[in-house]
Length: 375
Image (cartoon, rainbow, N blue to C red; front, side):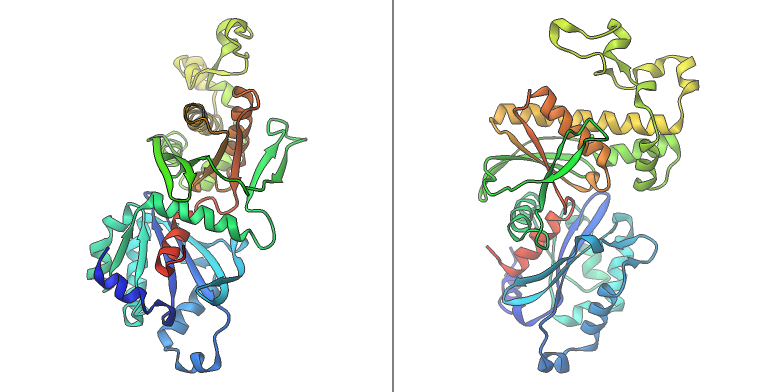
């Protein structure tokens, strides 16, 4: 890491704002610590650009047409480096990163003697733009290191008195399904499945001992991209809304479509998918499906693939706690319930699928922690 970074770190307690940035392939996630214990002396000495930044970020829930502050995720009354305040969670599409950098220039970020700690592939892709347009230097951090630090820290502080981690009871039954808190007090070992544009799967044995087991290119970006092609949708939210109204069994070929029922010899139930999109070989069935059916089948295909890979990794690593995180799961109850049911069913109850309230922000939190050098 660069020498200038350590020089600035030694002074970080005296300078706000404190940010952590995770620049992914599809979304940018930003966490911002808003100090609530500013003294009268500090307020008097505070420069206008810093006041402007704090007011802008905390008085809005939307930024332009695509930036969103997830107000429901705000963590209140945290203590970081001896300062008390609230932690805010903001996201916007990666294609709007140039506008974010320009905003930093317009609000004179570089005059605040601050440093941006950033993780994700975009920390490399946009490094030169930050420097030439915003006059800001990035400290680039490993995204998997930040992910682990972020999830362990957020789980340790909880969610405003509530549990951060949860699971689904009776996930296959719409009437009986319940979202219940889970105490991750004994987290190790755990399998961490990070579903962003693509997927990375990590085996975590302690806070300092973990490895990337495998991954897949078929992730949230695949789901959204295919939905755009197949249905003409323009947003992730629209794709999920369409999927919620669709019937994937009109698109997929099931075991019962081939065997007329269960394949009992190998324990395959008739409702299991034998071939994703297999019914689309038939012209008659292609003409009968709706865009909603196609969206639902795309979601089921991607989710089933992730669940299958996660289950095999858990068995190979002898781990029974599987934590799914990443922005693919944001407002995506269909996928979460399917993962919960599939892991429980195919493992005969040996594997438990766990989820987290701040699913997509852990990398950004890890970047913030690196800025503050919190162990």
